[in-house]
Length: 165
Image (cartoon, rainbow, N blue to C red; front, side):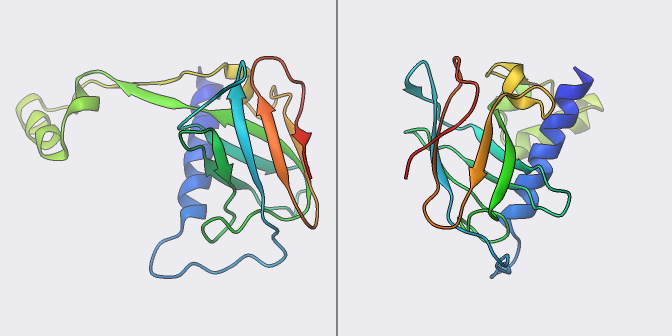
């Protein structure tokens, strides 16, 4: 469970770093567009975080979130700018929050905190197989090349990515 928390924390930090703050985020040098689709049993997976973690120590991580059709575009520094060419381990997770705290507005959460001395109970859970959320166990890989990069990841059995030009 500790590893899962660490992997989720890394994914959240990557998303926070790549989403950028302020009016304009700098563009990463040398990135190329990267898009793809995440499915499970042939059905699209909506709301999943897809993180490309570089094999190279001088590489940069990139991440994106799937839409209702399971499609994603990667971001390194600026929205949808892509990733640097290279090989990557690919992590996919979908975190759902349940419990009282998940349904409360921010004001309701503050009131609860004042009344009870602790935040409202909420539990976060990865609803996809843990195998794909862990950097050391994920079988998913991708090789980003100059030019078109369109990947397809099926979480029900594929041992890697299928790149389609």
